[in-house]
Image (cartoon, rainbow, N blue to C red; front, side, top):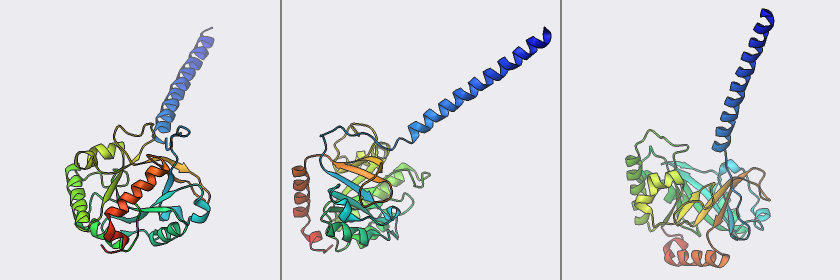
Length: 255
């Protein structure tokens, strides 16, 4: 009898341990699943203007094949003080050739001076006929997070001021955390391209919404980022026309 009781106790202990392990696994899975959500389902019929953003990481995109699925593309131009995306000129030219509206973006490095980053971006977009204000991508992910936020904001302000001296208008890209941490207090009235996997994407006015990192479209073999414009196709065209009319020097390729 004593041996049976000991055996029963062993199995009880084993069962309890298995339950604890199973619970831990479920908890870890739930936290992991929440961390890796990278897309949101859009409501049908609300958005009609779609686009993508790309860099050299997306390899070669066939924009002729893609143009029936999208209206615009944001192309990575630069990062930090010296780095230039090797596919920028190609992506810009091919997207333009396909009749798409094209913008350029710069990944802002926390550990580089704002002035140097402005110069790097200016050199890359010189003589480019862009359809949108240039985008400054500012976020913690992929950055030197040990740099204090007040230093980041100071360097960002210096970059924006220098670009404005070159008559280059800007738009900001970030997620919600980055927007409130680095952008909102200084540049709340500027065009915002928000990365968000909630609907609505943010409790602020936004112009573009990156709603997925898991998109697939004709002409691209890899998953890529999907975006929408906040308005109708008529609003979109009017937005571009207003921007172009405000930037006569840039349209001529003179910065």
